[in-house]
Image (cartoon, rainbow, N blue to C red; front, top):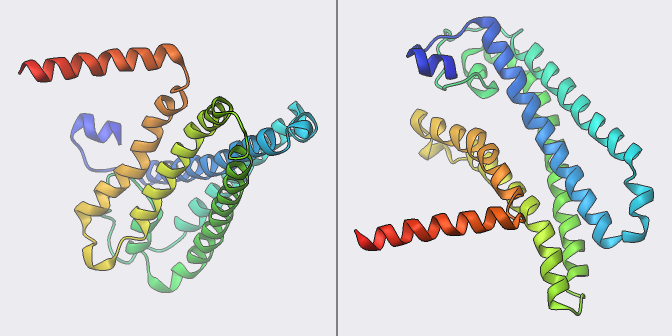
Length: 235
């Protein structure tokens, strides 16, 4: 995508398209898994602090990380292999700035899409299960936090959960909005904008959100915002 943008071209090779779809699917799956694991980490540390060392030791963390990457790899491999085994009956022009499964399915024969649709249904079900687990975990976390008598203790615990919750909300909301938009308002330009929204915005904001607890970073951001505000008032 960067090459096409810099050299003002709109073509990609068949192999390049397959590689692009594989890595995109791989990193999406890995992010869902890792966000779920991070939620479990916060759940155990807040709701079961005495069992933290047993449930989340170094070996358990290594196993969960390996499972996240392995599951994402297998899912991406299955989607890529199946998608690029479909015969293309509608040409080879994608209405998108990168190769993604829905756009390739639009070009394939309808009868050959059933297996890939099944894979998408399984992947969506697993992702929805992760989403439900995150919601359940945060309900339990908030129940515990609200019982903390100290306001400072509640604030400290909420500040620990906020970066992760912000990333999860941003990621899930953009993906849902991109893929569940009403057909009446669907258009190629809107699809393009939504794809940019969920594929570019969350990864770009992740480092900033996770660094918000860094006091030096917050001070630097506040100084910059103050300068912008003062410059705006002068103009």
